[in-house]
Structure formats: C-alpha cells, structure tokens
Image (cartoon, rainbow, N blue to C red; front, side, top):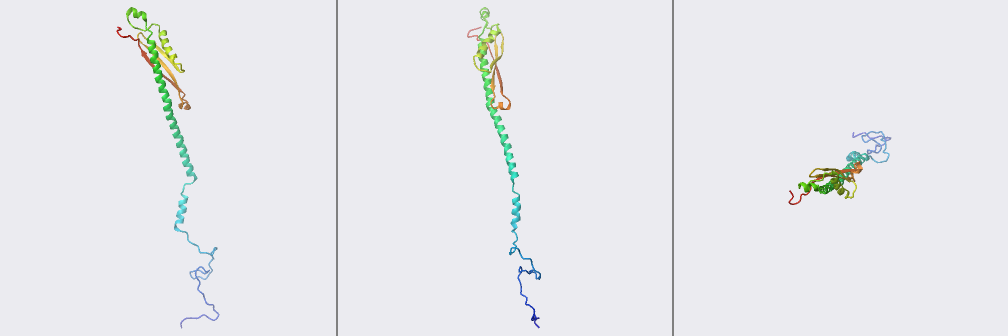
Length: 202
C-alpha cells in the first residue's frame, strides 16, 4: 500500500512558513509574535566599531586642558618679551647715561686743568696746578652745574701737581624694569687732564 490516508474526521495539515506563529524547526508550540510585526534585522558589523570610536573622541576636559596650556604659554611669552624690551630700552638709557657722564667729566677735567700756578710758572718755568685744590675743583663744578639737569653731580675731584681727575655721575630712570621694582640707577665716569704746555714749552 502506498500510505495511510487521513480519516474522514481528521483535518488536513497545512504547511506553515517560519515566523507564522510556529517554530521553523518543526515544533508545534506557538512562537511569541514580534511587537512591531516585523522581523529583527541584525546590526551591521561596523556599528559597534563606530560607537567605540565615538567614545574615544576628546571631550570638554581635553579642550579645557588645551586652553590651559595656551594660557601658560601666553603668560611666559609675555614675560620674556617684557624682559627683552626692558633690556633694550632701559639698557640703552643706562649706556647713554654712562656716555654722558664721561663727556661731562672730560669737560670738567679740562676746565680744571686750566687753573695753573702762574707764579711758579714765572719762577721755575714749570706748568703746575694751583695749590688751592678747592679752586681747581670749583672750576670743574661749574662745568657740571652748567649742564642744567637733575641727576648730574660731581662726586669726586682729585688734584695733583700736574693733573686733575674729575668723576661725574649721571642718574638714569628705568621705564620697563620699574614695573619689576628696579627704578634705575647712576652711571659714573671719570676723566683726567693735565695743563696744556703749549708749543715750545720746556
């Protein structure tokens, strides 16, 4: 015989596809329906990698760190530029004060060297300075006072028999370095001069 036919009262079995409420493996129990009525689609392979890569991006904390580094660099750079400007401007002012002191000291020494002892010159023929040291230095002081500027003074005047030494001090004011508590200073220079014997003098 070819096979057993269903009886008159048996219902014919209708084949069902997977997902129609019956398990695809042949089980007869009901399968829980999908809430959306659609089949679930597996996530792409690159989705998990994209999420991981996105979580590795720098957040607000990294940006704040960069801004802090730039602020520190800006402060240091500003201090360096300020110090360089102070060395150029204030250093130049100090050099100018030194040159001015040297020029005034040379003028004062030459003027003081003109105060020769005329009596000894007539008696001995020698050109020497006067024995009155105050009078010789007074001539140098007149040159210093003639500058007409504050901060210029003559701290020292030494008279010897044949020469005179005059020291002049010039004060200079700091501009940039004054902000760091350095207001400036004094530059001193000295010059020595002797009486001019002239042509033909012994």
